[in-house]
Length: 500
Ligand code: ADP
Ligand code: LRH
Image (cartoon, rainbow, N blue to C red; front, side, top):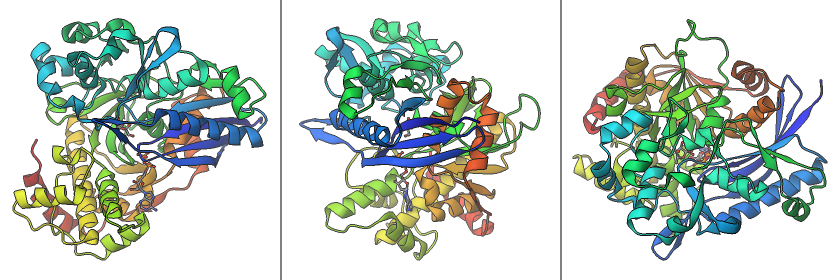
């Protein structure tokens, strides 16, 4: 069979990479062409992404790939959700995209709910209430009288914005657009009602396209700059990184009964822990609203019913705090220290709102412990252990509620993403949830990006076939549950800490 080659440009909140995928019809081979750090830049009162540098890194990735591969069958960009840029007259980029952890969305829940009720917003979108959803960022722009919004012709979500920089085409890919809380998942279209209620300019929302569609050709100017000599098609993969990651979960086999939700769940583990199940239709009920579950767009008409859990951000930001104080430690060192620390000392609710913003994480964790009558961890190892045990307990909490909502038993947990390298957390997840964990692949997002390009190109026939390729091509590590009694006790303590 012919081999086809694709480049995934996959940007996470902590790092980005260009991955070359070679697909021979049976298996996918993956090669890292370029990797770079990502993070926020504070400029005066605003926290931004560094868009010019990110674009430069994309060009470097394309250039490095072009140097070894004369031609490619496609390139695709995916990034984190919710953030966007605005484009104005004469293809002018208006301002620099703002980071979702910026403080501008403070107070925006209240402002929004005065104009449209919380219940109605959930009924239309089925999206979880996170303070940084695009809709609240837009409302903040509106209420502050931003000149950018007045001049905007088109809102482009972060991956669409990078796609526009690469091709000149303006379009909104559906999976990432589904993270805005402006999309109706039943119709797959923007909600006029929400735009009207919040007085947001409906006309700037772009035309929507499905994952796997062609976006356009790489601009000639960019091709010349990076040494690409053949015409190169930019394809929209599932541009929301979590959608690409979920597409690449190596779960094989049909559901237990036709149309039944699968007996496995996914946990896309990186800066965030996105835990959920793949369902055929959005599930929008008082229960899903109460537990703040979300319905994000998946591939091939599926819906990702999941919960955003604060994730390894807790460890990332603690590590950064220690590094700022001159104490630099690798993830491997931190995990070894956590492993040798005492189990089940202090526990936290990872989703406490106090953990969301940038800044000194160990102090905020200590404050949470004091507030809940616990002795705070007294060193790095115990603090990381507290974070990992608490995350694993939040996974259990979430799975129990998901099982009630979809009415099936979840037998297996698939952990994908950078966090699947964290063997301690994978084991804790198995232990806390009392179910086997299948860890890997680490680069699920890039894999989903690449294979959905292949699917768009007609090289794969279905999502099921795509997953079979992933399962054939990449090993998984299985973690069996242990010590379940001790985890049951800890779960009892944890339930007291978590406010529904
Ligand atoms: P994102 O896409 O959000 O930038 P990734 O999926 O790249 O995140 O995952 C990054 C996370 O993976 C890190 O924050 C870290 O917690 C975890 N990680 C990466 N390498 C290791 C390692 N060697 N040991 C333990 N954890 C690791
Ligand atoms: C993970 C992610 C997640 C959320 C958050 C903002 O990288 O995309 O699904 O949308 O970032």
